[in-house]
Length: 347
Image 1 (spheres, rainbow, N blue to C red):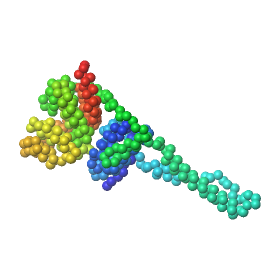
Image 2 (image 1 turned 60 degrees about the vertical axis):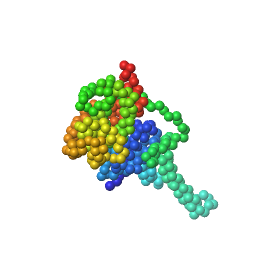
Image 3 (image 1 turned 90 degrees about the vertical axis):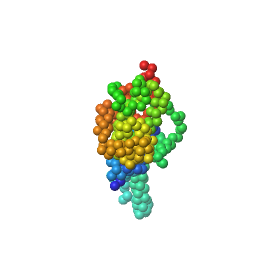
Image 4 (image 1 turned 180 degrees about the vertical axis):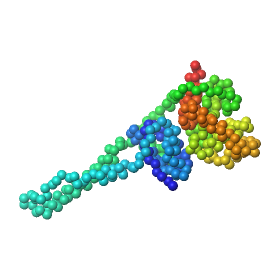
């Protein structure tokens, strides 16, 4: 069964916010026909969902991953609202006209005919003004139009604007203390002064986006930065939990990061148990041992423990990265991480 959802989003004021919301929605199975309209002060989102695969609350959770936005549900479109106003308007409240006393010398039937035309025209004009006045002034005209077409967002802007520089990122929340040991999945110099602890979901598109960013940071700061991977599978990603378990099964055989890369490199093609087992074979793992590990859910509790730990530290979505204990939420660009790292290295 399919249903339509119409929402108003407050706080998503930039193109990047709307782009992120659109991509996050489109990446979820069961969501179709995503349309976004940016208006003055808010954005409207319309989409269709297949209720057997996703529900309304999960849609709201997906949008909240993109930012701390206020969300309102719209039950009817503006035209329906306008017509309701028309229906409830008493069109009989027209000033009383003296149609009984014709002008001296005029044919009474002719006078009645003329007055009838005037009254009819007045009523029609009243209805038209109500409908179009509501549509025109019920909300301000959009300065930018954002529409979903072929997985792209098109912005119609009458005045071209120069691209803005990335907004400097500011870590949030209290500084967290992490005890990193050899049992953790660590990439880079184990004794590096800068530690990135990433809470991630292998099925999350934004985690896939930040994946090459971290590889570049490790390449550019080979001795100064280390990356620690923590599991944070989101409930609306059906294969995220098992993907995390599969990565831990690979870690058992000493190939966590190879399997980590294999998952993100193949994220766009979709996940399945069969794929997880095939990728283990591709990496020359002991497939009997790997398959038994995955089938029995050997590391399910470890994955869930990582998620609970992240929630206790203030993680609400993915990716969430702690840079020397300071939380940076979202798939922020390379330049933003570089700026924070450079500041820490100069202290």
